[in-house]
Image (cartoon, rainbow, N blue to C red):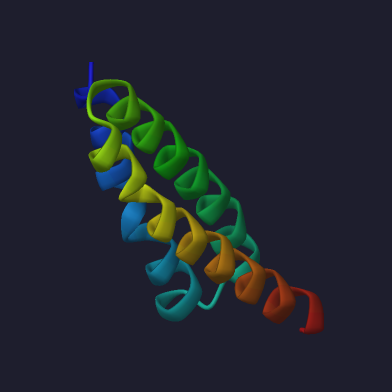
Length: 79
């Protein structure tokens, strides 16, 4: 049950940084970070159904990804 969200999360965790910093493509990184945000939320919900404290540990991670997405969006918008 947890393998699918965890696999999606693991695959999408490093890609936005590579797109943004490595390839200098903030637009593509923004698309990818949206997928990362969805993966974090889905994984957190999956954990929450099994173990409440484990699911709640995803709240700060979700907030961090949302903040990173906001920064990414602003940089993309201003350029």
